[in-house]
Length: 213
Image 1 (cartoon, rainbow, N blue to C red):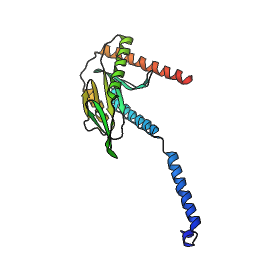
Image 2 (image 1 turned 120 degrees about the horizontal axis):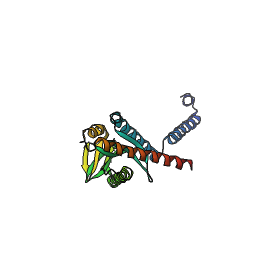
Image 3 (image 1 turned 60 degrees about the horizontal axis):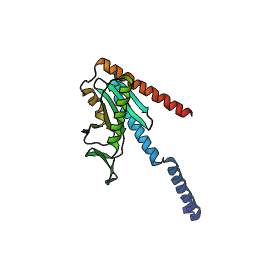
């Protein structure tokens, strides 16, 4: 203001340009790339799912998080009296709608641009089948592993199933699991839980060895 009042417009303009440039540089420097933002959003969703499962763990359920596999990881594996569940967490930014078993995401700032996740269900079912095979190999129990995709997005349907895959909003997850009918007796539950524990321990050791290399 003093520079403008005194007629020193050139220094004022230079200072304004410098300040604006510095502000833009700081904003760009502090804004993470989109892939980092997506990772952060995904990690936050997984933490929400973990918190939702804590009460079940106190009731005796076995829950393991971030179980590494050869390619990628299992977000969560839960074992209770109603069976085994592979839980894949999705924290997508927008509104999710299931059409023909395929999640469609519309974003609030651009509702006409729909993103389709055509491989989400098949990937979850494939991962559940791999866990089933691993459990059978470890303890001899032949038990179905339910694939569940947990949304922490705006998901108006809340709960739906398509071709053996369940889609559910995270806020309903715990109550839905608790309401499932009992399928495992005490002995089966213990053996399957031990197999999942063994799988989680081995995956952690493998991850440690990989990091050491």
